[in-house]
Image (tube, rainbow over all chains, first blue to last red; front, side, top):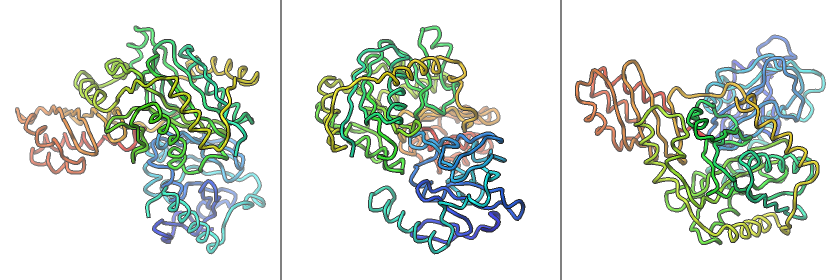
Length: 160
Length: 338
């Protein structure tokens, strides 16, 4: 992982993808190191396909600083297309920052999902174990992302 | 594939129970109860607010004076007026059986309802915006959400609809916005007085078919009844009614009537606008800008039929007052009204 402020994006089947971070496949959440500081602090956000398949984001509810997160459990709510659903945490830890700009304008997450549209920052509980279940190798990330887009296109969820 | 679709008809229930009964079902399904289709008809009118919406969108003074309770639901959408002319339905499934994409999930879960409307004699369609419509008018108000590990999609068979009251319960900017909203409401929200019994039977058959299982009448479990009692208390509390915190709130006062159809009221400096937007174009605008010196009506006519991105260009022809009005227009964002 590298600094999220210097994100380099590649285009995969028409969707931007950042290869400098890790991904949780089912939820399309990404996890990235914040700057060059404390390696146990991670930033979390939604990838571009996660954004696309939610529909227009109307509302975001994010947790308060200090709240405890558990991997696989909800840490907030997202409303799109009149559907309120959980944002599921890809890691365990404690919330150390929330993106107030994205909470005030969820469109920011649509416009810049890998940059200014991040959601929260977390102090990881177990730095050694948190990579479990995440995809981090660039080749694997691209292959997974392509397969997801292909699947969604076959189902008509996203346009060809 | 599930073994059975549980069908619970709660019948005519209090406004509070018309909400808490199906929320209790969602917690039950999350805990292992079978997929469930439920129906409820409120005994009295009330107002129901989507999970994220700001309480200030409801005219609480009017509601209190008329004895209309206000409840916050756990699914999405805006503030809506509910009464016994509406038969509400909810389909609730374990989240694992529902597509992860919200757009896809809504389509999959609303399609059987469209079949049921048709079976009950209503020429319903699921449009490109994911609304159940008949022609251009919405005939079913829907909302959806994930409650723990269950997904629930709600909707209604609108047998009769009080457009005036549905508009009156909203906190709007004034008479002009109320008038424009009521006009759009009358054109784009339509009652389809089908036979409720036929509709319910068709719903059970359509959802059972979609799930590949048999529909079976059922009732709440003991655990779900306990949950419902707890939800009664939660939904009646001021804390719950206040909402989850700091939702995104646009500067303009906006009301969505159906997808792509909305009104807004906004101001900038000493200028103000109230407008109706249909399909991304200004249908009608009421402008107030002291510097226009009698040209407000001409500016409003010039805006009629224009796409929102063209508005600033049109108003540029009206000098500084036009620029102020353009700034007011810029605060409206219909894409983000759930």
